[in-house]
Length: 405
Image (tube, rainbow, N blue to C red; front, side, top):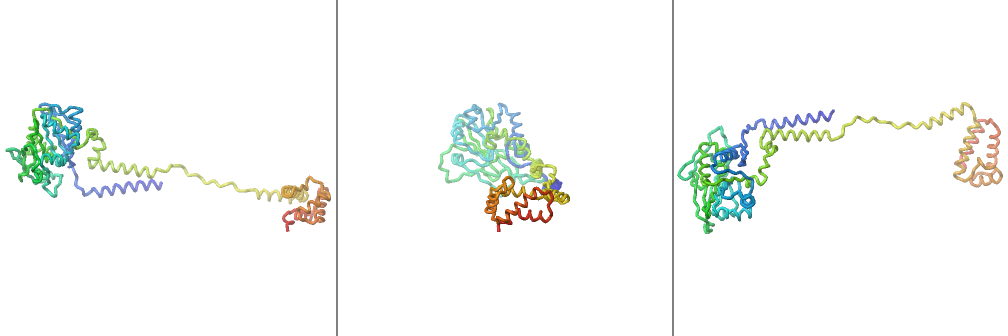
């Protein structure tokens, strides 16, 4: 019962602690983690983008979780199609890299929106990405006026863009100017004239890179002032079916990663409920780990009544005043002890002078005293009455320890 009370006390304290921790926290309606996922309805997911592309792309729109090597070689999904990639960081494997250029040179068009690129791609294309702010925050305070900026795409100016969504711009280091590269075109600038989107004609195709992947998310799609940037960018991929892959953001198993637990952990309230339930189960296992059973009564061992029995029997003999019977029982016990210790059997052997002599030598008793002892014992067998004094005298003489002096 005490353990159950302690269990409920611990659970109550846990709820109080969690309440105090979250009491003053502002309620968060949105999760501002960039995922670019087709099933993510949060501001920086791509649920709205995928739905619109599926409904409005004239040729065909295909969503995939395969890497470039798998799309180009094994599945041949990219045959006569264009490619669209949105991720935080683009890293191509050696096998991807080999077929990436071959795909573009033979007529493929690729649009990559990422905040950072692997050094091999940056060195080849002679650019690097640079952050414009030392401090920036991804969450947007939608209830107040935002610090906004603008960008120029071709001849159009797109305004009302939160500054935190234009975190990076392209830079062209002088030390790599000597590296040969195809002619590049700057498609879009920010308000400080920094390039944010570049196009590289390579062979028969085009590689378009953008360092503003947040402008391809739900927030931008549903914002009337921003979404023109998306459609103008995707206009370079028109005329062919479009393939969008999430491999470079979620990996090959991204399609199976939208599990129940993933969704639970993505929602603050459900996440706390999950943690509380898990902590409750752990505490319950801790307090009920021992097997429950009824109390085991203490069973005392039965008392030794042998001494009481002996006293009762001796009392009967004293009441009956049968001294002869007492001496005979002592005589039998004494004779058995002599037989075991000295090999002498005074009960069954005849008390001849030779026997008495042998007995006296082994016991260490005077021969005349031994002769007198056996004579009294033999007379006792013939006499049915023995006085108390004679009984005590004979019993004292039949104590073997008294002879070992």
